[in-house]
Length: 147
Image 1 (cartoon, rainbow, N blue to C red):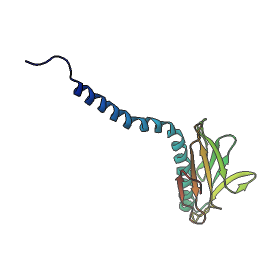
Image 2: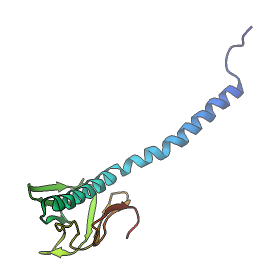
Image 3: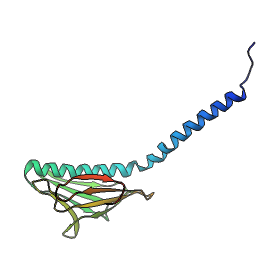
Image 4: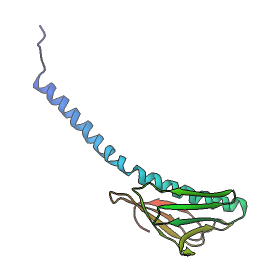
């Protein structure tokens, strides 16, 4: 004859499983808040790489101009100019050489940048990412620690 109800051991097993699942889910949910920051960093890094490859391919200089206070940048390529706005919760500080009082990065036809530097992005929670451009080679990378 089967017993009705659950035993204390069965209840403990279910609670243990819930605790393990909660422990796995909490870091994933907390990480969701950093997606706008990561997306913005990857978009800027991709635009830098596009400018570099376009400069090499077309044999022309390609430029990116950063407008820190407005939270946007301008990408000047042979086939046109593109303006990109960052999400409202992302702030940007560009540590690049200035041209006409604006932080400016340009890639020569060899793929080399005018100078190395970095862009610091920060979200409303204080998380930071750095997009770093290596001088001479023009390598672009994203890092969570400053160069």
